[in-house]
Length: 212
Picture 1 (cartoon, rainbow, N blue to C red):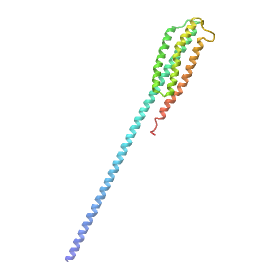
Picture 2 (cartoon, helix red, strand yellow; picture 1 turned 180 degrees about the horizontal axis):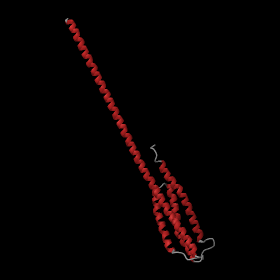
Picture 3 (cartoon, rainbow, N blue to C red; picture 1 turned 45 degrees about the vertical axis):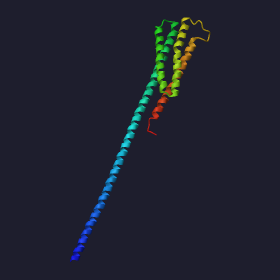
């Protein structure tokens, strides 16, 4: 009888020990799973934070590039506007000078002063183009400005020529030829500046895409 009780007791203890061991193994396994899950979540959170930081940096770069594009476009447009203002006023003044030989015209002095002021404004715009670049656009703008600067003195010579009744000049040296040449060269330089400026803006646009 006592042997039976002993066997039963041993069996119960074995069952309890086995159950405890199983519970311990299960507990450790669960802890490992929880730890692995927590690590996975930590890595996922870190990855999400890194992706968010990259998106924010990309958005910041995009906004900065858009500001650069807008600034460059405004600089070029202002220079063109100032150059065309000089060209328009100079053309108008040249026409008035030519007509003054045959008919009364408006106050030429006021328009001469306006051309001088327009040339100075274009010079200020030129400096901004030179700072903005690139070199090709800067050089073309300098060429345009060189032609613009020649308009006032050429117009004054043309006016004196008209006032003197075309006297004092050898055949083939009429200031009208010089005026036409300067005006033609200016238009050529302006025509060359426009596509170069557009290309420089396109270069910024193309480089504002995804990071490489």
